[in-house]
Amino acid sequence: MNIRPDDFVLEIGSGHNPKARSDVLCDKFIGDDEQRGGAIVTDRPMVEADGQCLPFADRAFDYVICSHVLEHVKDPAQFIAELERVASRGYIETPSEIGERIYGWHYHNWVVNLVDGCLMLRKNEKNSQFGQLFHRLALTDKHWKRFHITHHHLFLVQYEWEEKIDYKILLEHESALDLECHDTLDRLVASDDNVQNEWVLLLKSAVPRRIVSRAKSLLRKNKSRQTKTLQEILVCPQCKGEITWEAHSLHCKTCEKSYRIVDGIPRFR
Image 1 (spheres, rainbow, N blue to C red):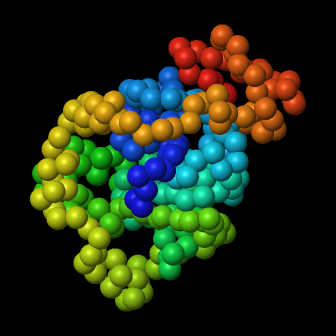
Image 2 (spheres, rainbow, N blue to C red; image 1 turned 45 degrees about the vertical axis):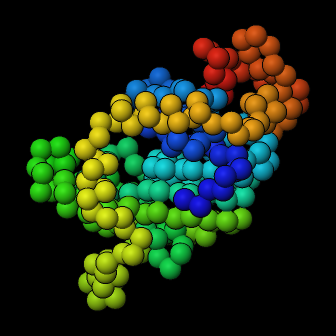
Image 3 (tube, rainbow, N blue to C red; image 1 turned 90 degrees about the vertical axis):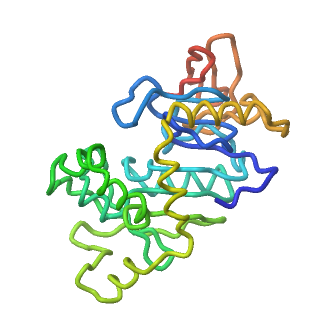
């Protein structure tokens, strides 16, 4: 990710393993761990909100990280418009169509491919061919786990954008992945110059997530960079109007909606 030293960074769907560089976290389900790999991390300014209605002012951030969220949303066009509204640059990561076909997450609404720099989204048929087989292998079979780690570019879409996100929503019968096409196969199996050394990837995978999360928290405590406060950047997620703060609630001056503050976290859901 091309994050500059002074960038103010938002992470959407930060979940149990937020990036160390993220300054503000946003998650839709703070109290529900069903669709993530562990308990929510709240070690920095955070809000609970739907990514399709973000409670942040226009261009409040320099960079927005959106990792494994786009495939979950109901309306990707609205979600993408919100990303472009709150930041000028960002990073999107999702499972690839190959990853979806093999693992078959039932709660993903969209299948995503990256073709010539354009995100191609198609409604997920949610017809898992292999059930939980490869989920089990990822946990128990060292050979499959190693293959997945060393060939992670097959299983992931990684897309960095500036100003505009290039995307297309396909019809249900359309597909952006033709595995009978020699050019497609050549592209998929070609060595990726950006793929890190496989031993580095394997070492990273061996470190328990709790240790990774703790290390990230310690790194953040040592930062002296100036950042904005939530009071400076929050707006009403519905009308984008100005809000006022009270001890346990927020109020929109324009549409008169009220929102709770629970355990110090603004809740916009």
